[in-house]
Length: 75
Image (cartoon, helix red, strand yellow):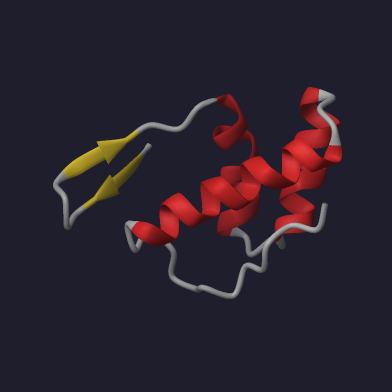
């Protein structure tokens, strides 16, 4: 769960978001995040990369990331 103070909204993440959240907080790259999803949920690399990119973009849109240096995952 995250709090968007600007919008006064609590945001819940699904299971895949929950799986990568600790890695994201620790500074993992998008490729590392996608690798976690691939290993945990047995999804293909392209789908995992797309999910990570969308998740990170949605957090960035709400200014919920302290750093914008998480490059897109490579497909």
